[in-house]
Length: 307
Image (cartoon, rainbow, N blue to C red; front, side):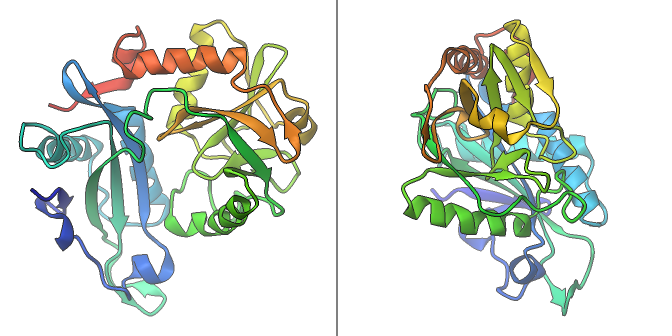
């Protein structure tokens, strides 16, 4: 049985969800998107941070000047419908979780530089997580390379706008970093302060305290929110402010927060080796794993059953 994708009001087969190579989304990189994790809990598939993810997606559509943005509640219902169609029941095409849900808004047609219509098509796609079992477990520590160019400035591309073209410069650096033996890259901002990685936030741990860059320079990562809330639950001090690069270099621990890996320890920054996972990273990983498994008192706040 083939997986199905929700498109503009109906479920269609996976192979039918296509756009033309000359669509605005493909030719101009204008596709807006958001990605969330879905875990298989006691109450069936449950989405992690459903409302924050959908709210952020709608905000991206508005920042992109897309028209007729759907109500948040409607999108949540559509996501639940698509997950049930793909993941629930003995004959479900994606019966084994965890899963990822990607919500997409795409201008399908173009008239030169501008789309033919400012009203996009909406897609909801469900896939299995890249590495089964990775969501909610502490992955192997990674090697991080500092990019040799700054992150796109926020006055050029607002951090709140998750648009495909915004990831192109980072992708180029990621390919180069992988060729040099690194796993990820991290960007500075125009002031030389810490920004973020590709599709992941970077948090700095020093003297038992977590420091994170402000949201006027980086994406408001949903997993980052949950990790910082987990730190508060553990009485670990947190500080959101500009993070000077020397603080990154001198950190006791570095950890990344992302949808797919949740809490990701960093064992190397350029030529510098770090303790990984460090004690605070381990504590945060434990809380996040329990939360995603539905066993933590924060689970009810972050998990939404979709059956």
